[in-house]
Length: 145
Image 1 (tube, helix red, strand yellow):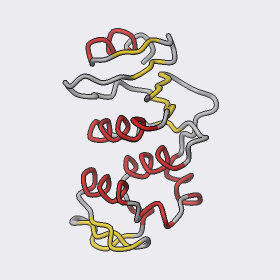
Image 2 (cartoon, helix red, strand yellow; image 1 turned 90 degrees about the horizontal axis):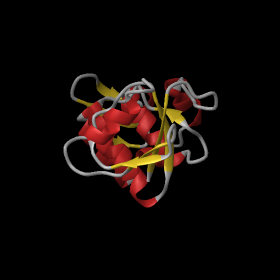
Image 3 (tube, one colour; image 1 turned 90 degrees about the vertical axis):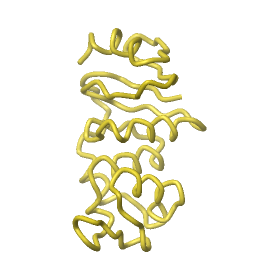
Image 4 (tube, one colour; image 1 turned 180 degrees about the horizontal axis):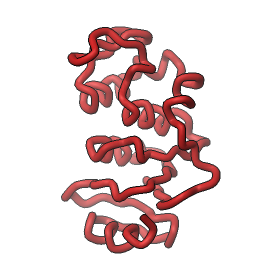
């Protein structure tokens, strides 16, 4: 399940770009799930662990990916850390839910992310409530952001 803490969180990693730059592993980039995420969010194709083909930027290294994708990759692989996912746009929401389908993940958010119209399950840690729709999420999380 995806667990979200809204508002400032002392233990959260806020500078995900810097963290990614020094801590990502080449094997993460060529993971099939990550390749799919990169294609969907950044419309870019992973050529190998060190080269991604971006339609806008050309050939880039992994550190050239968008902040959202880098944060998603960290959430997927660095399970012991809590990352602030406010660098992620709404196009990352479905990926956060997919990452948390098989293993619980805790993230920090400073804004209301749109998880869409479909039903989902997210635990708001501020109140320890599980919500299943944006309507429920907004009514609870809105108090904290």
